[in-house]
Length: 359
Image 1 (cartoon, rainbow, N blue to C red):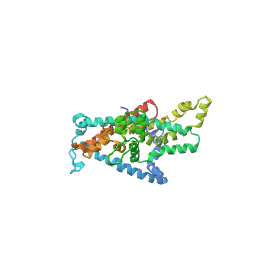
Image 2 (cartoon, one colour):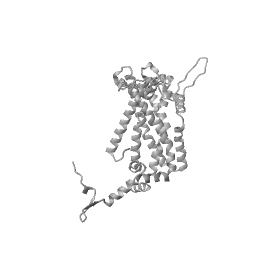
Image 3 (cartoon, helix red, strand yellow):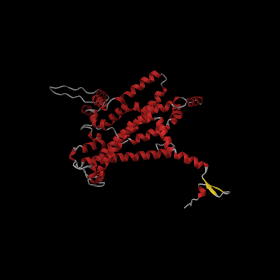
Image 4 (cartoon, helix red, strand yellow):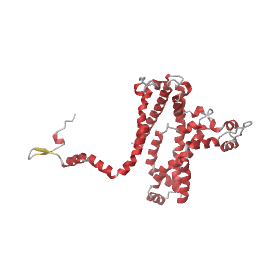
């Protein structure tokens, strides 16, 4: 152990035999003493900006942090007649049931978790590079009017409600139905196109979106159409921030358009790509509950059931599951814990592989 002495912190005057505080330390002490005053002055000077921050803080407080208290229900015996804090602790019993202790509940959870991971993985595999490609494409469009029109066209689907997007998908891929004495329903445009291209007539008759073979493909395509354009805004902002001198230097060296993208643009936006990738991995297992709930049917239930829809079914009492509310909360919590581990792992890998990381 290192023993500290006065000489380590104070200056010693040999002539008078006294100790004094160094000038640098006096400055640091003065800054530390007036630290909160300076913070207060900064807040008062920019009070309008901090006032605009209040609604966001309230939203996070009311909708993100306060509901966390209810998570203790995962470790207590649920009772509708008793408050959460007065319920009896049961430890990790519900988590054990999900992980394999209950042969009725565990297969349902693991099937839903597998579907969640596969659906999210396909979304990441195709959904992450697409906005980058769009941003590079927009950067090569020289006409500002043309670029603006194209950007508006690809941004618009983001502002459509989930109900409209799912209804469009169902109408495009619906089967042909003939009702005797009633109203006939013509096959959807995409269903007819797939039939012309040689798809299995039985699947087309059933409705492509209601089949296990095509459900994930349709989900990923509609998700790309809905979000890719809007997600490209961040990457486009990073692309247009690249210095023009870098392009000029590459052109002098004889680099063409593809070489400029590879050796100039992509390295310049690498930090943005890494940060966005880590954030995307953070929401990897949080697939769109509303969209999946609306697209789910008896025909695609096997691959469409995810953790969030399963948790909702248990919590609402479907399937006559005992302690369904607590099991649903435990399933969601376990799903989010795995997502957190993925974020930490991705951030650690990014930090070790490069100097860029989320934290």
